[in-house]
Length: 329
Image 1: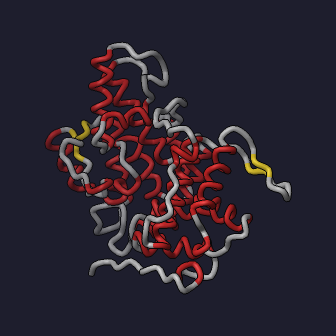
Image 2: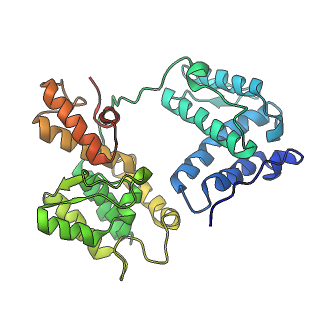
Image 3: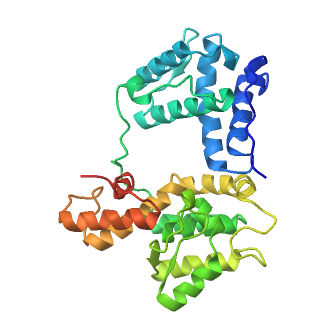
């Protein structure tokens, strides 16, 4: 059955999505994306929209129907102020400075949430105009996802009874998979391809449905070990890490959120950081030298080839995206 988005009801508080502003945004997001789809996206928006809701409430706005363009502009000025210094409210509460990328994400969330409750694009805030600075996707910090740290985190997860969470970690670090890809990957198919051609393609659970054989990764010892471990801990009768009665959303809540805390204790800040570690391995293997985060770029031709390869193996269509993983020029 096709999904039907709830139509905004201008006669009711928060357009009929609930009495509380934060709750209304959350319900509207579920209606927009689907209650069982895009879990990560919905979760991120629901966390970030709290900043906007608190801002609205401090301005005396508690109903989404009363949000106007002037309030959005004021919110943009508030975020711009926080790019350089802390913001102190009249009651003494201090909001800490934020990064440019986070400010852009906050504005993106506000635009999405307003579209979800209003079902139109009448209210919209341009992040670039509001902040006066574009978001940079070029990574400048060192990658914190050594293979040793990933394996250490996996060992702790196994000890805590989170074996499938450990499998997600090693698959992400060894094969560059996103979490959803690690959960939904057909492990039997990968094993067959590995035995037949020495490598395997990442096909299931890909972002935007990009199922492409060009994303075939040659397997070394670490890749083989990761795949074998994942196969050994998957549910009986399943071709992937999820049981037939499970979905990715429930697995996030029951397992991966706990695993994330363990991952951080072992020095790896996020699951995405594991993909960055994989990307750096690929880049350095091609150029036979350090990534831009570790040292100067040498051969520009090899650098371009390495970037294109990194982007392709991570499941991206544009080679420029590699800069957000391994740094730029």
